[in-house]
Image (cartoon, rainbow over all chains, first blue to last red):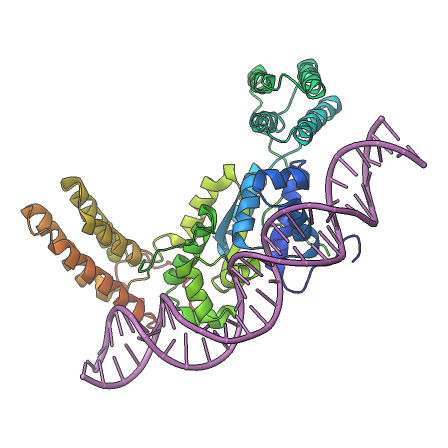
Length: 208
Length: 208
DNA sequence: ATCAGTTATGCACTATTATACATAGAATAT
DNA sequence: ATATTCTATGTATAATAGTGCATAACTGAT
């Protein structure tokens, strides 16, 4: 039982690749096992075992997890694999070439959201927040938006600390979406094209 | 066909869709459960249970089956799902290297069914028709079946025009299903003797 | 009616996932 | 070093996938 237990021989390559993709998808979203647990309904302990101990997961569980990660399980013909791969690369999350300060701030926002979730078990609005953030993340953001971002974050943190006014979370989410729209409109800078991040799916990036 | 379409409540929607896709992939290749069983190592009984009784299959089994079917399990971002679907359609479910005349006739059959539906709003038998057609569509069909297909279609059209004898629709559906079975059974016949065709087809008929 | 091929079920039995807690161990802040 | 968060494990139990064999049920063919 090492730190990273080896995979059992139970699962074949294919299966292990999927599991690995799952884990990477979670990490790419900055999600913790506990969060994913809450979103998917799968207990944290089980997620851990799945990721680390090579549990031969059942399809329903896989579906639950992927759903929570905004992914979908698909059966693609071998012949189509390369094409599909290229598409998913395009669509997957890019940590875009960002001014360092912006990148850091985005990270902090994500942190704040996560902290929120940890503190308060039952919040429906949180998902809106997460989505707003996810919508902003893949954009190229000008330095002029650093301030607004920071303010949003501090507001969020204040709410979290005060343990009250959770109703305001929805409001924050709204302004965050608004901010996103502004960002988009300031310059016709659509999605980014390069992606050093293959992220999940059909990864052939081998390893051991 | 959906003799027994009763899935357990254990599996979620997503999971059931995958199972269905599996079954259809098998049928599209004209494979029988015993054959798939040999290729994948999964016992026929288990395959049957999986397809019909909504077994919550494990990932390793899924991988084994998909592999035997020349498919791969992929996790695709929700946003990319439509694109991926269009690709996989192009590659697999698509008119499978069909003689042009057959393809056209299938199209006409579909037309006839649709016309029927427009004329008569509520007919239970129509669904059977639709299913029979859907079951035929993904098959590789020999030119020898062109005549039977055509006859079925004209019968259908006659019924529709006469505005009567709707009871016969069920009969047509039955013979269509029958036709499907015949088509499947003639699989081990490497035909391809079409005339009206660009000579370069490059058909990648992958039957092993 | 009979036969052959395919799929669905029944049953006994095993192997493993899944779950609930609890908690240890690792990694990160403070 | 201390606290906190995150991940991995331990234990016990329930639920069920998986297997093998046999065979029923259904279909199309002779």
